[in-house]
Amino acid sequence: MLRVVKTLVVLAVLAAVAAFAGYRYWESRLDAPIAVEETTLYEVPRGAGYHQVVRELASRGILNDPWAFRLLVRLEPGSVPSLRAGEYALEPGMSGRELLTLLGSNEVVTYSLTVPEGWTFDQFRAALEGAEKLEQRTSGLSDDEIMARLGQEGEHPEGRFFPDTYQYHKGMSDLDILRQAHASMEEVLAETWAERQEELPIDSPYEALILASLIERETGAAEERREIAGVFTRRLERGMRLQTDPTVIYGMGERYEGNITRADLREATPYNTYVIDGLPPTPIALPGRAALEAAVNPEPGDTLYFVSRGDGTHHFSRTLREHNNAVNRYIRNR
Image (tube, rainbow, N blue to C red; front, side, top):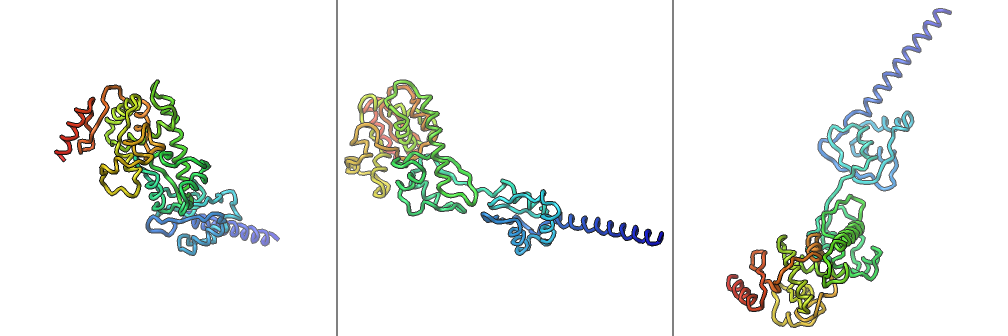
């Protein structure tokens, strides 16, 4: 009897040792490096389950011991993360456990899209169409249809989107970026309008947006924005036409080929500020924060004219005679 007991004890010890060794081997398989030699992108499909992802990773040769990960669900179900759809960067040396943790995190691969200040909405749309990994939901839609999709039915899109760098990940769409840009412009416009000077010749945030778009298109020199805003403000106060070339160009649309003729300056379009009084009916570009701030806080002074020097800056004049002399001087220089 004693011999039987001893045998059972030995067998129990051997079983325990074998179980422990098996457990440690199983853990070693979970902690073994995945089989990638360089950064590799892997996408968890929307709605994919744990076993589906393990099978796919094994079929691609990334996980060498899929049995160990299937067993994980049975032995340690609490350690199995809920997988999140998205694109992830798998790095060399990463363990299988670390891979699973990554696939259940928010650390998806991100991309960026930069929208420069002064772009038009058409340029913004073209950039969205060319953005890699961005789902296209606005292709073939008119501007009006896009605004309706954004919940802004009847709103003209020009100027309504804030120029900035936007981050996105695979699975996001062009509408997601447009929503962000629209919300950003609403926020920045409200902030700048709340800090405006008193007694401006503009009566609403939208008029400030229009004026800012003119300033944005007239100069890229930061130090000039408020001075150009001052010229436009004084001309509006005096009932003078703004006579700014970018509005003529915008009104010409695709007909513009790089030059403005005298006939173009006389053409009666809604945007030709050589013909119409006051501001054009809509913005002509996407203005940035600095242009918006300049529009509502113009530089005081008495200048009423400006002309390009040809180097990105402008010469400002108080009288028409001084302005005409400057125009002749800079035209000759060019």
